[in-house]
Amino acid sequence: MSFMKHIAEHIVRSYECDSYSHVNNSVYLNYLEYARMEYLHAIGFDYKGLVEAGYYLYVTHVDIYYKASAFLDDKLLIEVFPTKLKKISGELKQIIKKEDGTICADATVTWACVTKEGRPSKIPEEFMVQGLIPEEA
Image 1 (cartoon, rainbow, N blue to C red):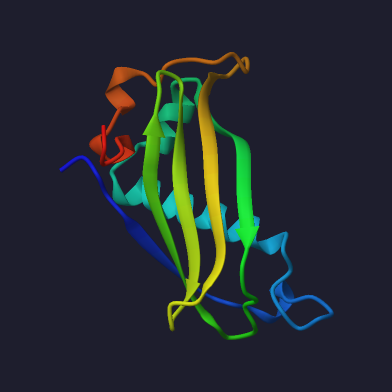
Image 2: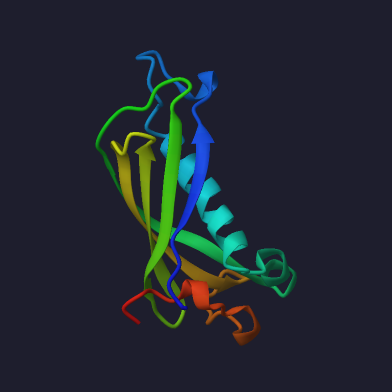
């Protein structure tokens, strides 16, 4: 199986809420980062090994739509799955939902592999895992 969807769970904490008593929009980016790393762990991607080999995965673009507010103690389910894979980059779809299915945020995150000098690079073959490949590939 090449396609994988992963769901990371998170409970909203008090310090993530703003003066309107809901999760501040900027905090959703942290949720997306957390869930992406959980996804990489789940698909067996050796991120530490990639860094030790002199490569990084940079987020190059985030397209996010805020749809509903999340509040203190809400349990959030953050879906992550690949939608594109190119030679040096790819996209992940991330959907943040409440337990009842209400979508709080819908994001597409573009990433690229770079060398430690910041130059675009193909992911070394030893780090290419099936979970990076989208369903339609």
